[in-house]
Image (tube, rainbow, N blue to C red; front, side, top):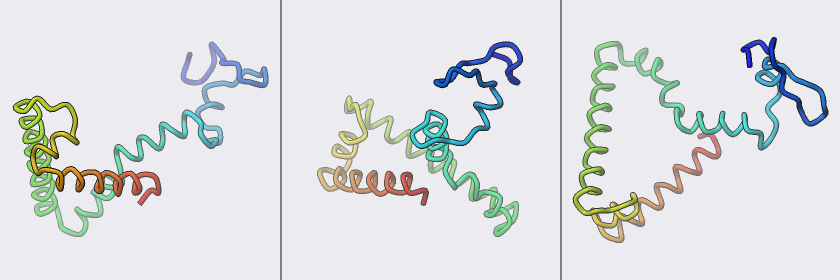
Length: 125
């Protein structure tokens, strides 16, 4: 299909064909595929990416860049530690990794933090 719907039109449930523009820019309905995709992108990208310019305004280019590099190193390092633990102990999911790293208390903490994260994603906080 062309980007502007000139060549092929997709029929809708009412028997009328809608162009790409009509489909892409129409109102988002509850439970629609486009709405679900937008929510998934919102959760994946999050407000952190959108707040980056504000961080640079508050801290300046030098400190802002240093903070970004520190965050990058911390993220890569923590992911490598998780991957190393999973490979060395032959663990298949994060729940088992948390139990191996810190026992039942760490496993429970992971569950609570996941619940808080999911609540924030669902409410947009």
